[in-house]
Amino acid sequence: MAKLEIINNPLIKTKLTLIRDKRTTSKDFYSNLTDIAMLMSPFVFKDINLEEVKVVTPICETAGYEVKDKILLVVILRAGLGFLEGFRKTIPEAKIGFLGMYRDEETLLPHEYYKRLPKDLSNYKIYILDPMLATGGSAVDACNSLVKYGAKDISFVGLVGAPEGIEKLNKEYPQVNIYLASLDEKLNESGYIVPGLGDCGDRVFGM
Ligand code: PRP
Ligand code: URA
Image (cartoon, rainbow, N blue to C red; front, side, top):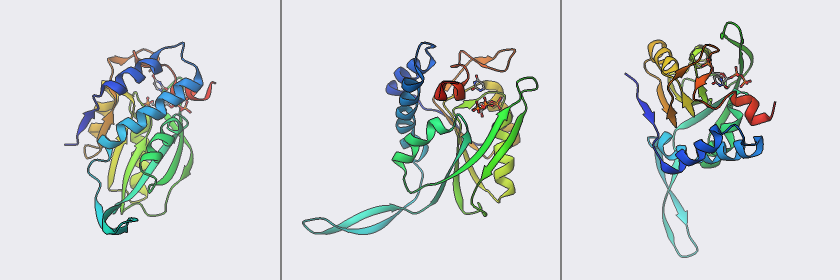
């Protein structure tokens, strides 16, 4: 069974409060989301493998480290773009792939409209970046696409999740680890997370 980790950190909690606040501007929303991504990063990437390298300081030669694993961050458009800057800053070695998908407002089913990924994903440690895990439909669809490209090692990194989405992703992909900053209460009748933060893509981009 995969791991569900709710990253419990006081700095993340205060920034998430600002993000949830409906009065927060798009600029501040994005800035806090970037900070949260940077704060989540040490937890999400704590198991990546390093290799020892030599480094020459102004004083002498010593041992240093480089990332050994092939890391791929897969950004789910649009809201995942709000997460990219913070994670990329902490792991600049990562390659970045994109999946464009939107939820039909009536059916809540995801529709994929864009895909840009390396051809063979079998050797990558893959981290899906999408702040919202609501019904779980988008996350499962993203996993379906990645598996078609050979993906074997996938984690989902979100900001806020609903129990419904976690259950669905766990059922369809029990091997996928899930990292969140908050496990919220439920979904409402329109498929929004409660208490949540509203439409994340709209709040990141102001429309
Ligand atoms: C949001 C969010 C997720 C999806 C989650 O995207 O970024 O991808 O909803 O919902 P689900 O778990 O029920 O599938 P949205 O469809 O609103 O597109 P956007 O990011 O372009 O606004
Ligand atoms: N997508 C969002 O952006 N917000 C939600 O609450 C649910 C899905």
